[in-house]
Amino acid sequence: MSPFSTHVLGIAAILASPALWQGFVTGEIGMDVAVTRYLIVLGVVWVGLSALAMLVGSPPAPAAATSEVDTGPGMSMTSESGVEHAPPA
View 1: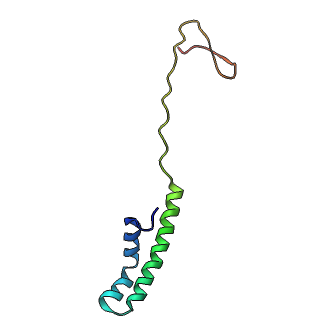
View 2: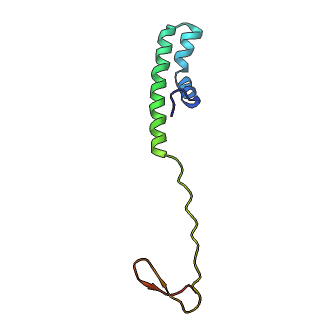
View 3: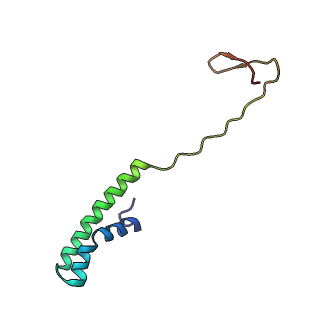
């Protein structure tokens, strides 16, 4: 996952919003402190979402369809192991 994806940037902005508000709107803390806190949160969110993506992984591929072969009446079917099976009813 890219550290500059919208998910990472958005979640980091939400989590760091108190610091960003105090830095840019009210001026209670310096803007450099607010940006530093945002960048730290950005790194933490990026690592967290990347770890989550690794744990979840991509969805599995659909299983291939298997077809049953009609061997006809009286014919036997032999598996790969050499065991003989009765034909399907």
